Amino acid sequence: MKIGWKRPSQLPLQWRLTLWYLFTLGVILLLFATFLYFQLRHTLQNQLDTALQLVASQAVINVDRDGGRLAFQNVENESGGTLTGDDFVIYLLAADGTIWEKSGQLAEGVVAPPAASGFTTTPTGDDWWRVFSQEVSADGVTGWIQIIGNMDPINDTMDRLLAIILLGIPLALLLAGAGGYFLAVRTLQPIDRMTQTAQTISASDLNRRIAYQGPADAVGRLAQTFDSMLDRLQTAFERERHFTGDAAHELRTPLAALKGRIGVTLGQPRRPEVYVETLQEMEGQVDRLVRLSSDLLFMARLEQGQMAGRRERIDLPDFLAAVVDQIRPLATAKAITLTETIPAGLSLLGDMDLLIRLFLNLLDNAVKYTPVNGRVTISAVQQKSELHVTITDSGPGIAAQHLPHLFERFYRVEDARSRLDASGSGAGLGLAIAFEIARAHGGSLRVASQPGQGAAFTAVFPQNSAAAGAAQ
Ligand code: ATP
Ligand code: MG
Image (cartoon, rainbow, N blue to C red; front, side, top):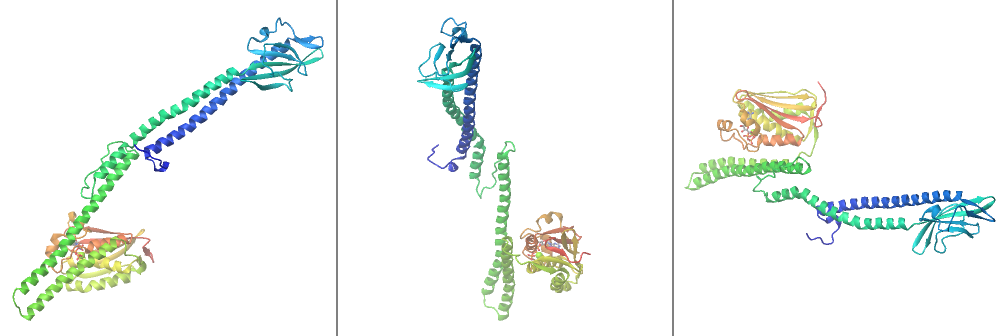
Protein backbone atom coordinates (compact mmCIF):
# COMPACT_ATOMS: atom_id res chain seq x y z
CA MET A 1 0.00 0.00 0.00
CA LYS A 2 1.32 3.41 -0.90
CA ILE A 3 1.57 5.84 1.96
CA GLY A 4 2.67 9.30 0.98
CA TRP A 5 3.17 12.03 3.53
CA LYS A 6 -0.26 12.34 5.01
CA ARG A 7 -1.55 13.81 8.20
CA PRO A 8 -2.15 10.96 10.69
CA SER A 9 -5.89 11.70 10.71
CA GLN A 10 -5.98 11.01 6.97
CA LEU A 11 -4.21 7.67 7.10
CA PRO A 12 -6.23 4.50 6.56
CA LEU A 13 -7.82 3.18 9.74
CA GLN A 14 -5.55 0.12 10.04
CA TRP A 15 -2.49 2.38 9.95
CA ARG A 16 -3.94 4.75 12.48
CA LEU A 17 -4.79 1.87 14.82
CA THR A 18 -1.27 0.46 14.44
CA LEU A 19 0.34 3.84 15.02
CA TRP A 20 -1.70 4.48 18.15
CA TYR A 21 -0.86 1.03 19.40
CA LEU A 22 2.85 1.55 18.72
CA PHE A 23 2.84 4.96 20.34
CA THR A 24 1.19 3.61 23.50
CA LEU A 25 3.46 0.59 23.64
CA GLY A 26 6.55 2.76 22.98
CA VAL A 27 5.69 5.12 25.83
CA ILE A 28 5.08 2.20 28.21
CA LEU A 29 8.34 0.46 27.22
CA LEU A 30 10.31 3.67 27.55
CA LEU A 31 8.91 4.42 31.00
CA PHE A 32 9.51 0.87 32.11
CA ALA A 33 13.12 0.82 30.76
CA THR A 34 13.91 4.16 32.38
CA PHE A 35 12.57 2.93 35.70
CA LEU A 36 14.49 -0.34 35.40
CA TYR A 37 17.74 1.45 34.50
CA PHE A 38 17.71 3.86 37.39
CA GLN A 39 16.39 1.32 39.88
CA LEU A 40 19.19 -1.13 39.02
CA ARG A 41 21.80 1.59 39.17
CA HIS A 42 20.53 2.68 42.56
CA THR A 43 20.57 -0.91 43.89
CA LEU A 44 24.08 -1.64 42.63
CA GLN A 45 25.44 1.59 44.09
CA ASN A 46 23.73 0.85 47.40
CA GLN A 47 25.38 -2.57 47.47
CA LEU A 48 28.79 -1.01 46.84
CA ASP A 49 28.17 1.60 49.52
CA THR A 50 27.14 -1.04 52.03
CA ALA A 51 30.31 -3.03 51.25
CA LEU A 52 32.46 0.11 51.62
CA GLN A 53 30.90 0.87 54.99
CA LEU A 54 31.42 -2.72 56.13
CA VAL A 55 35.09 -2.66 55.20
CA ALA A 56 35.46 0.71 56.93
CA SER A 57 33.96 -0.62 60.13
CA GLN A 58 36.42 -3.54 60.06
CA ALA A 59 39.36 -1.25 59.29
CA VAL A 60 38.52 1.16 62.09
CA ILE A 61 38.91 -1.64 64.63
CA ASN A 62 42.49 -2.20 63.42
CA VAL A 63 43.62 1.42 63.73
CA ASP A 64 45.93 2.30 66.58
CA ARG A 65 48.30 5.09 67.62
CA ASP A 66 51.81 4.75 66.37
CA GLY A 67 53.82 7.64 67.77
CA GLY A 68 52.40 10.92 66.44
CA ARG A 69 50.25 9.26 63.86
CA LEU A 70 47.84 6.42 63.36
CA ALA A 71 48.61 3.04 61.85
CA PHE A 72 46.88 -0.26 61.10
CA GLN A 73 47.61 -3.07 63.48
CA ASN A 74 48.03 -6.63 62.29
CA VAL A 75 48.85 -5.53 58.76
CA GLU A 76 51.69 -7.55 57.37
CA ASN A 77 52.11 -5.86 54.03
CA GLU A 78 50.65 -2.92 52.12
CA SER A 79 48.48 -4.95 49.83
CA GLY A 80 45.57 -4.66 52.22
CA GLY A 81 44.67 -8.20 51.40
CA THR A 82 44.14 -9.17 54.97
CA LEU A 83 41.70 -6.39 55.47
CA THR A 84 39.78 -6.06 52.31
CA GLY A 85 40.45 -8.66 49.71
CA ASP A 86 41.31 -7.29 46.27
CA ASP A 87 38.24 -5.19 45.65
CA PHE A 88 38.91 -2.12 47.70
CA VAL A 89 41.75 0.24 48.44
CA ILE A 90 42.16 1.52 52.00
CA TYR A 91 43.87 4.74 53.03
CA LEU A 92 44.72 6.08 56.45
CA LEU A 93 45.21 9.85 56.26
CA ALA A 94 46.10 12.76 58.44
CA ALA A 95 43.61 15.60 58.58
CA ASP A 96 45.82 17.63 56.18
CA GLY A 97 45.81 14.82 53.60
CA THR A 98 49.20 13.26 54.41
CA ILE A 99 49.01 9.53 53.67
CA TRP A 100 49.93 7.50 56.73
CA GLU A 101 49.06 4.12 55.36
CA LYS A 102 47.59 2.61 52.21
CA SER A 103 46.73 -0.74 50.78
CA GLY A 104 46.47 -1.09 47.02
CA GLN A 105 47.46 1.43 44.38
CA LEU A 106 45.40 4.23 42.93
CA ALA A 107 45.77 6.77 40.17
CA GLU A 108 46.81 10.24 41.25
CA GLY A 109 44.16 12.58 42.50
CA VAL A 110 41.66 10.12 43.81
CA VAL A 111 42.54 10.65 47.40
CA ALA A 112 41.89 14.12 48.67
CA PRO A 113 41.78 15.44 52.18
CA PRO A 114 38.31 14.49 53.26
CA ALA A 115 35.97 17.35 53.99
CA ALA A 116 33.39 15.38 55.87
CA SER A 117 32.30 11.87 56.62
CA GLY A 118 30.27 10.14 53.94
CA PHE A 119 30.38 9.20 50.29
CA THR A 120 31.83 10.98 47.29
CA THR A 121 32.32 9.94 43.68
CA THR A 122 35.59 10.84 41.95
CA PRO A 123 36.63 10.37 38.32
CA THR A 124 40.18 9.65 37.08
CA GLY A 125 40.51 9.34 33.36
CA ASP A 126 38.12 6.60 32.31
CA ASP A 127 37.54 5.27 35.81
CA TRP A 128 35.06 6.28 38.44
CA TRP A 129 35.67 5.70 42.11
CA ARG A 130 33.36 5.57 45.03
CA VAL A 131 35.01 6.90 48.21
CA PHE A 132 33.79 6.46 51.77
CA SER A 133 35.48 8.67 54.35
CA GLN A 134 35.27 8.24 58.11
CA GLU A 135 37.05 10.01 60.95
CA VAL A 136 39.10 7.81 63.29
CA SER A 137 40.99 8.57 66.48
CA ALA A 138 43.10 6.55 68.83
CA ASP A 139 44.72 7.81 72.03
CA GLY A 140 44.16 11.46 71.15
CA VAL A 141 45.45 11.29 67.56
CA THR A 142 42.78 11.95 64.94
CA GLY A 143 42.88 10.97 61.28
CA TRP A 144 40.70 9.76 58.44
CA ILE A 145 40.10 6.36 57.02
CA GLN A 146 39.04 6.12 53.38
CA ILE A 147 37.71 3.05 51.62
CA ILE A 148 37.72 3.34 47.85
CA GLY A 149 35.82 1.06 45.49
CA ASN A 150 35.98 0.88 41.72
CA MET A 151 32.68 1.74 40.03
CA ASP A 152 33.68 0.18 36.70
CA PRO A 153 31.70 -3.07 37.21
CA ILE A 154 28.56 -1.06 37.94
CA ASN A 155 29.11 1.20 34.95
CA ASP A 156 29.78 -1.79 32.70
CA THR A 157 26.55 -3.45 33.81
CA MET A 158 24.62 -0.24 33.21
CA ASP A 159 26.18 0.22 29.76
CA ARG A 160 25.18 -3.31 28.80
CA LEU A 161 21.65 -2.74 30.04
CA LEU A 162 21.45 0.52 28.07
CA ALA A 163 22.61 -1.28 24.93
CA ILE A 164 19.92 -3.95 25.43
CA ILE A 165 17.27 -1.28 25.94
CA LEU A 166 18.33 0.78 22.93
CA LEU A 167 18.35 -2.28 20.73
CA GLY A 168 15.44 -4.14 22.31
CA ILE A 169 12.80 -1.37 22.30
CA PRO A 170 12.95 -0.66 18.54
CA LEU A 171 13.01 -4.39 17.87
CA ALA A 172 10.01 -4.98 20.16
CA LEU A 173 8.18 -2.06 18.52
CA LEU A 174 8.92 -3.45 15.08
CA LEU A 175 7.52 -6.86 15.97
CA ALA A 176 4.53 -5.39 17.83
CA GLY A 177 3.86 -3.06 14.89
CA ALA A 178 3.77 -5.95 12.45
CA GLY A 179 1.47 -7.90 14.80
CA GLY A 180 -0.72 -4.87 15.42
CA TYR A 181 -1.08 -4.13 11.73
CA PHE A 182 -1.99 -7.74 11.03
CA LEU A 183 -4.63 -7.64 13.80
CA ALA A 184 -6.07 -4.35 12.61
CA VAL A 185 -6.37 -5.64 9.07
CA ARG A 186 -8.07 -8.82 10.27
CA THR A 187 -10.49 -6.89 12.48
CA LEU A 188 -11.47 -4.62 9.60
CA GLN A 189 -11.89 -7.43 7.11
CA PRO A 190 -15.63 -8.02 7.79
CA ILE A 191 -16.24 -4.28 7.31
CA ASP A 192 -14.40 -4.46 4.01
CA ARG A 193 -16.59 -7.35 2.94
CA MET A 194 -19.66 -5.37 3.97
CA THR A 195 -18.51 -2.45 1.86
CA GLN A 196 -18.09 -4.73 -1.13
CA THR A 197 -21.61 -6.12 -0.66
CA ALA A 198 -23.00 -2.64 -0.20
CA GLN A 199 -21.35 -1.53 -3.43
CA THR A 200 -23.11 -4.28 -5.37
CA ILE A 201 -26.51 -3.16 -4.05
CA SER A 202 -28.25 -0.64 -6.27
CA ALA A 203 -31.68 0.91 -6.32
CA SER A 204 -32.78 -1.64 -8.91
CA ASP A 205 -31.48 -4.56 -6.87
CA LEU A 206 -32.45 -3.97 -3.27
CA ASN A 207 -32.90 -7.67 -2.59
CA ARG A 208 -29.33 -8.31 -1.56
CA ARG A 209 -28.38 -8.40 2.10
CA ILE A 210 -25.11 -8.66 3.96
CA ALA A 211 -26.51 -11.52 6.10
CA TYR A 212 -23.51 -11.39 8.44
CA GLN A 213 -22.99 -14.69 10.25
CA GLY A 214 -20.53 -13.57 12.94
CA PRO A 215 -21.29 -12.66 16.58
CA ALA A 216 -23.45 -9.66 17.48
CA ASP A 217 -20.48 -7.43 18.31
CA ALA A 218 -19.93 -3.94 16.94
CA VAL A 219 -19.40 -5.28 13.41
CA GLY A 220 -22.35 -7.69 13.67
CA ARG A 221 -24.63 -4.90 14.87
CA LEU A 222 -23.47 -2.66 12.04
CA ALA A 223 -24.31 -5.39 9.52
CA GLN A 224 -27.73 -5.93 11.12
CA THR A 225 -28.48 -2.22 11.13
CA PHE A 226 -27.44 -2.02 7.51
CA ASP A 227 -29.68 -4.94 6.56
CA SER A 228 -32.73 -3.57 8.36
CA MET A 229 -32.09 -0.18 6.76
CA LEU A 230 -32.15 -1.95 3.39
CA ASP A 231 -35.45 -3.60 4.36
CA ARG A 232 -36.98 -0.22 5.03
CA LEU A 233 -35.49 1.25 1.87
CA GLN A 234 -36.85 -1.61 -0.19
CA THR A 235 -40.32 -1.18 1.27
CA ALA A 236 -40.19 2.56 0.62
CA PHE A 237 -38.94 2.07 -2.93
CA GLU A 238 -41.65 -0.48 -3.67
CA ARG A 239 -44.28 1.79 -2.18
CA GLU A 240 -43.05 4.61 -4.34
CA ARG A 241 -43.08 2.40 -7.45
CA HIS A 242 -46.63 1.31 -6.72
CA PHE A 243 -47.67 4.83 -6.08
CA THR A 244 -46.28 6.11 -9.38
CA GLY A 245 -48.00 3.26 -11.24
CA ASP A 246 -51.30 3.83 -9.45
CA ALA A 247 -51.15 7.59 -9.96
CA ALA A 248 -50.44 7.17 -13.66
CA HIS A 249 -53.30 4.70 -13.94
CA GLU A 250 -55.73 6.96 -12.11
CA LEU A 251 -54.82 9.88 -14.36
CA ARG A 252 -55.01 7.82 -17.52
CA THR A 253 -58.50 6.45 -16.95
CA PRO A 254 -60.36 9.79 -17.13
CA LEU A 255 -58.02 11.01 -19.86
CA ALA A 256 -58.74 7.91 -21.98
CA ALA A 257 -62.48 8.39 -21.38
CA LEU A 258 -62.18 12.02 -22.43
CA LYS A 259 -60.25 11.12 -25.56
CA GLY A 260 -62.75 8.41 -26.49
CA ARG A 261 -65.66 10.76 -25.96
CA ILE A 262 -64.06 13.50 -28.06
CA GLY A 263 -63.29 11.00 -30.85
CA VAL A 264 -66.85 9.69 -30.94
CA THR A 265 -68.39 13.17 -30.87
CA LEU A 266 -66.16 14.49 -33.64
CA GLY A 267 -66.87 11.39 -35.76
CA GLN A 268 -69.87 13.01 -37.36
CA PRO A 269 -71.76 16.31 -37.19
CA ARG A 270 -74.13 16.49 -34.23
CA ARG A 271 -76.91 18.63 -32.92
CA PRO A 272 -75.92 21.46 -30.54
CA GLU A 273 -77.66 19.71 -27.60
CA VAL A 274 -75.38 16.70 -28.07
CA TYR A 275 -72.29 18.92 -27.92
CA VAL A 276 -73.57 20.52 -24.73
CA GLU A 277 -74.26 17.12 -23.21
CA THR A 278 -70.82 15.86 -24.23
CA LEU A 279 -69.12 18.93 -22.78
CA GLN A 280 -71.02 18.50 -19.51
CA GLU A 281 -69.89 14.90 -19.29
CA MET A 282 -66.35 15.92 -20.10
CA GLU A 283 -66.51 18.54 -17.37
CA GLY A 284 -67.24 15.75 -14.93
CA GLN A 285 -64.13 13.87 -15.99
CA VAL A 286 -62.02 17.03 -15.89
CA ASP A 287 -63.36 17.74 -12.40
CA ARG A 288 -62.23 14.29 -11.38
CA LEU A 289 -58.78 14.93 -12.85
CA VAL A 290 -58.50 18.29 -11.12
CA ARG A 291 -59.53 16.73 -7.81
CA LEU A 292 -57.07 13.89 -8.24
CA SER A 293 -54.11 16.13 -9.05
CA SER A 294 -54.89 18.54 -6.24
CA ASP A 295 -55.22 15.57 -3.84
CA LEU A 296 -51.85 14.28 -5.02
CA LEU A 297 -50.24 17.67 -4.64
CA PHE A 298 -51.79 18.02 -1.21
CA MET A 299 -50.43 14.59 -0.18
CA ALA A 300 -46.96 15.42 -1.43
CA ARG A 301 -46.87 18.69 0.52
CA LEU A 302 -48.23 16.98 3.61
CA GLU A 303 -45.58 14.26 3.46
CA GLN A 304 -42.82 16.79 2.98
CA GLY A 305 -44.00 18.50 6.15
CA GLN A 306 -44.79 21.74 4.35
CA MET A 307 -48.22 21.88 5.94
CA ALA A 308 -49.63 21.92 9.43
CA GLY A 309 -47.56 24.94 10.28
CA ARG A 310 -50.37 26.98 11.84
CA ARG A 311 -51.57 25.72 15.18
CA GLU A 312 -54.60 27.24 16.80
CA ARG A 313 -56.80 26.24 19.67
CA ILE A 314 -60.02 24.86 18.23
CA ASP A 315 -63.20 24.47 20.25
CA LEU A 316 -64.24 20.93 19.35
CA PRO A 317 -68.11 21.05 19.65
CA ASP A 318 -68.39 24.19 17.49
CA PHE A 319 -65.81 22.99 15.03
CA LEU A 320 -67.30 19.51 14.50
CA ALA A 321 -70.85 20.91 14.29
CA ALA A 322 -69.69 23.12 11.42
CA VAL A 323 -68.00 20.18 9.66
CA VAL A 324 -71.09 17.99 10.10
CA ASP A 325 -73.25 20.77 8.65
CA GLN A 326 -71.19 20.63 5.46
CA ILE A 327 -71.94 16.96 4.99
CA ARG A 328 -75.56 17.12 6.10
CA PRO A 329 -77.08 17.67 2.64
CA LEU A 330 -75.46 14.44 1.45
CA ALA A 331 -76.80 12.54 4.47
CA THR A 332 -80.27 14.02 4.11
CA ALA A 333 -80.31 12.99 0.44
CA LYS A 334 -79.76 9.37 1.53
CA ALA A 335 -82.06 9.66 4.58
CA ILE A 336 -79.12 8.95 6.85
CA THR A 337 -79.42 10.03 10.47
CA LEU A 338 -76.40 12.15 11.37
CA THR A 339 -75.82 12.68 15.11
CA GLU A 340 -73.00 14.26 17.09
CA THR A 341 -72.21 13.83 20.77
CA ILE A 342 -69.27 16.10 21.61
CA PRO A 343 -68.87 17.01 25.30
CA ALA A 344 -68.68 20.76 25.81
CA GLY A 345 -65.28 22.12 26.76
CA LEU A 346 -63.16 19.80 24.68
CA SER A 347 -60.65 21.57 22.51
CA LEU A 348 -57.86 20.67 20.13
CA LEU A 349 -54.66 22.42 19.11
CA GLY A 350 -54.13 22.11 15.37
CA ASP A 351 -54.39 23.42 11.85
CA MET A 352 -58.06 24.22 11.23
CA ASP A 353 -58.00 23.70 7.42
CA LEU A 354 -56.25 20.36 7.68
CA LEU A 355 -58.56 19.12 10.44
CA ILE A 356 -61.65 20.12 8.42
CA ARG A 357 -60.28 18.01 5.58
CA LEU A 358 -59.57 15.05 7.88
CA PHE A 359 -63.09 14.92 9.35
CA LEU A 360 -64.78 15.71 6.02
CA ASN A 361 -62.97 12.75 4.42
CA LEU A 362 -64.10 10.42 7.23
CA LEU A 363 -67.68 11.73 7.23
CA ASP A 364 -67.80 11.62 3.44
CA ASN A 365 -66.81 7.94 3.48
CA ALA A 366 -69.30 7.14 6.24
CA VAL A 367 -72.18 8.76 4.35
CA LYS A 368 -70.97 7.48 0.98
CA TYR A 369 -70.66 3.83 1.96
CA THR A 370 -73.67 3.65 4.30
CA PRO A 371 -76.84 2.60 2.56
CA VAL A 372 -80.07 4.58 2.60
CA ASN A 373 -81.75 5.02 6.03
CA GLY A 374 -78.52 4.26 7.82
CA ARG A 375 -76.91 6.02 10.82
CA VAL A 376 -73.69 8.00 11.18
CA THR A 377 -72.49 9.21 14.56
CA ILE A 378 -69.59 11.45 15.51
CA SER A 379 -68.41 11.44 19.11
CA ALA A 380 -65.39 12.64 21.07
CA VAL A 381 -63.88 11.61 24.36
CA GLN A 382 -60.83 12.58 26.42
CA GLN A 383 -58.91 9.42 27.33
CA LYS A 384 -56.01 9.99 29.70
CA SER A 385 -53.51 11.95 27.66
CA GLU A 386 -55.33 11.54 24.36
CA LEU A 387 -58.31 12.98 22.58
CA HIS A 388 -60.33 10.44 20.57
CA VAL A 389 -62.76 11.54 17.86
CA THR A 390 -64.74 8.62 16.44
CA ILE A 391 -67.01 8.45 13.40
CA THR A 392 -69.24 5.39 13.44
CA ASP A 393 -71.56 4.24 10.67
CA SER A 394 -74.08 1.47 10.14
CA GLY A 395 -72.68 0.65 6.70
CA PRO A 396 -71.46 -2.61 5.21
CA GLY A 397 -68.25 -2.67 7.24
CA ILE A 398 -64.82 -3.70 5.98
CA ALA A 399 -63.38 -7.23 5.86
CA ALA A 400 -60.35 -7.90 8.07
CA GLN A 401 -57.95 -8.48 5.17
CA HIS A 402 -58.48 -4.90 3.94
CA LEU A 403 -57.97 -3.17 7.27
CA PRO A 404 -54.13 -3.10 7.25
CA HIS A 405 -54.10 -1.46 3.78
CA LEU A 406 -56.94 0.98 4.20
CA PHE A 407 -54.68 4.00 4.79
CA GLU A 408 -52.47 3.29 1.80
CA ARG A 409 -52.71 5.64 -1.13
CA PHE A 410 -55.14 4.51 -3.87
CA TYR A 411 -56.34 1.56 -1.83
CA ARG A 412 -60.00 0.74 -2.37
CA VAL A 413 -62.14 -2.17 -1.35
CA GLU A 414 -63.45 -3.45 -4.66
CA ASP A 415 -66.78 -4.62 -3.20
CA ALA A 416 -67.57 -1.20 -1.88
CA ARG A 417 -66.56 0.37 -5.17
CA SER A 418 -68.72 -1.84 -7.32
CA ARG A 419 -71.71 -1.05 -5.14
CA LEU A 420 -71.37 2.63 -5.99
CA ASP A 421 -72.01 4.35 -9.23
CA ALA A 422 -69.05 5.80 -11.14
CA SER A 423 -69.54 9.32 -9.80
CA GLY A 424 -69.37 8.11 -6.21
CA SER A 425 -66.17 6.18 -6.56
CA GLY A 426 -63.15 8.15 -5.48
CA ALA A 427 -59.47 7.67 -6.10
CA GLY A 428 -58.79 5.97 -2.80
CA LEU A 429 -56.82 8.92 -1.44
CA GLY A 430 -59.30 10.14 1.17
CA LEU A 431 -58.16 7.91 4.04
CA ALA A 432 -54.46 8.24 3.10
CA ILE A 433 -54.82 12.02 3.36
CA ALA A 434 -56.74 11.75 6.63
CA PHE A 435 -54.01 9.50 8.02
CA GLU A 436 -51.24 11.92 7.03
CA ILE A 437 -53.10 14.85 8.58
CA ALA A 438 -53.51 12.96 11.87
CA ARG A 439 -49.80 12.13 11.75
CA ALA A 440 -48.86 15.73 11.04
CA HIS A 441 -50.61 16.56 14.31
CA GLY A 442 -48.58 13.96 16.19
CA GLY A 443 -51.58 11.66 16.30
CA SER A 444 -52.87 8.65 14.42
CA LEU A 445 -55.90 7.21 12.69
CA ARG A 446 -57.42 3.85 13.65
CA VAL A 447 -60.16 1.74 12.22
CA ALA A 448 -62.35 -0.94 13.75
CA SER A 449 -64.81 -2.80 11.58
CA GLN A 450 -66.44 -6.11 10.81
CA PRO A 451 -68.37 -6.99 7.69
CA GLY A 452 -72.07 -6.21 8.16
CA GLN A 453 -71.44 -4.39 11.46
CA GLY A 454 -70.52 -0.94 10.22
CA ALA A 455 -67.19 0.80 10.65
CA ALA A 456 -65.64 3.07 13.28
CA PHE A 457 -62.77 5.41 12.36
CA THR A 458 -61.01 7.07 15.29
CA ALA A 459 -58.63 10.00 15.03
CA VAL A 460 -56.36 10.09 18.07
CA PHE A 461 -54.53 13.26 19.10
CA PRO A 462 -51.92 13.44 21.86
CA GLN A 463 -52.52 15.71 24.81
CA ASN A 464 -50.05 18.40 23.75
CA SER A 465 -52.40 19.15 20.87
CA ALA A 466 -55.56 18.16 22.71
CA ALA A 467 -56.77 19.97 25.78
CA ALA A 468 -59.63 19.27 28.08
CA GLY A 469 -60.84 22.77 28.79
CA ALA A 470 -63.44 21.38 31.14
CA ALA A 471 -62.60 17.92 32.29
CA GLN A 472 -65.89 16.20 32.75
P1 ATP B 1 -61.70 9.21 -2.13
O1 ATP B 1 -61.88 9.35 -0.65
O2 ATP B 1 -60.33 9.50 -2.59
O3 ATP B 1 -62.75 9.90 -2.88
P2 ATP B 1 -62.38 6.52 -1.53
O4 ATP B 1 -63.43 6.98 -0.57
O5 ATP B 1 -62.66 5.34 -2.33
O6 ATP B 1 -61.91 7.67 -2.47
P3 ATP B 1 -60.77 6.27 0.82
O7 ATP B 1 -61.58 7.31 1.49
O8 ATP B 1 -59.33 6.29 1.00
O9 ATP B 1 -61.06 6.22 -0.71
O10 ATP B 1 -61.29 4.88 1.33
C1 ATP B 1 -60.66 3.71 0.87
C2 ATP B 1 -61.61 2.56 0.83
O11 ATP B 1 -62.00 2.17 2.14
C3 ATP B 1 -62.89 2.89 0.15
O12 ATP B 1 -62.79 2.63 -1.21
C4 ATP B 1 -63.88 1.97 0.80
O13 ATP B 1 -63.88 0.73 0.15
C5 ATP B 1 -63.33 1.74 2.17
N1 ATP B 1 -64.05 2.54 3.17
C6 ATP B 1 -63.71 3.72 3.65
N2 ATP B 1 -64.56 4.16 4.58
C7 ATP B 1 -65.49 3.19 4.69
C8 ATP B 1 -66.68 3.04 5.49
N3 ATP B 1 -67.06 3.99 6.37
N4 ATP B 1 -67.43 1.91 5.34
C9 ATP B 1 -67.03 0.97 4.48
N5 ATP B 1 -65.93 1.06 3.70
C10 ATP B 1 -65.18 2.14 3.80
MG1 MG C 1 -63.11 8.59 0.72
